[in-house]
Length: 221
Ligand SMILES: CC(C)(COP(=O)(O)OP(=O)(O)OC[C@H]1O[C@@H](n2cnc3c(N)ncnc32)[C@H](O)[C@@H]1OP(=O)(O)O)[C@@H](O)C(=O)NCCC(=O)NCCS
Image 1: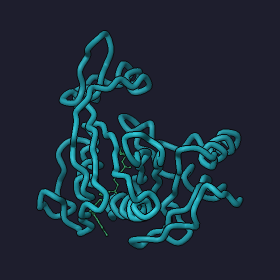
Image 2: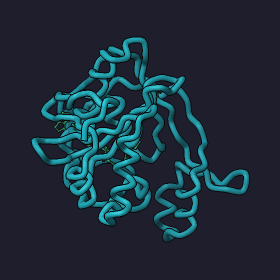
Image 3: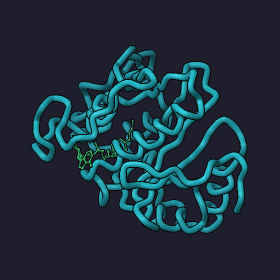
Image 4: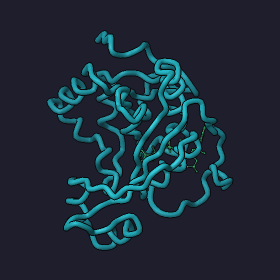
């Protein structure tokens, strides 16, 4: 399906970023799922053909968002999206690597490839994203890629808040450092992170805090 909104596939860092297509949707539907508190990323519902078609049409729509699948050869190993028209900057979101491909630097490499391309296409813009405070794994990757936390907010997400009422108390307890019950509802601490275009990116196998990759991690994510 030709689509003028999308560039030719973007190669970089051992990956190729492609727009969504039916075969990639089929693969993403089979990805492992994490469930709470990352259920919003799970794509198993795409096994339903009707929902797969609807989601593919959504992912190919002309508009401010571009949705990419990171591929190794023909295998889908990650995905990410960007709003290229957000007032605040090039807004990265939907960053997701399934559990079976985690720990190989896919997140950092696909974000690096996309940001290098975006820096050429949109040379006036910096980058922005928001991240739930409990997503420590993601934040490590963002810090390595030159993002800095510029603001902390309390955010209410209705789906997430609904899940909080449903999960076992122990599960909610593990998130307690990142939650508050305020204004009659659950809110999650989120970070706004920004990256100046051209900021250095660390794609080495070590974490930004100097601990070798693979050491045990605190918290979730
Ligand atoms: C967060 C998430 C995207 C991370 O994916 P990932 O590919 O495992 O992340 P990274 O790119 O940081 O790679 C992980 C490790 O591989 C290592 N690595 C291996 N090969 C590498 C390479 N060639 N280049 C860079 N790092 C490499 C890194 O050092 C990193 O180590 P660390 O986790 O100990 O810091 C994934 O866990 C996920 O989808 N989680 C659920 C959804 C989510 O939280 N999304 C973000 C919401 S804001």
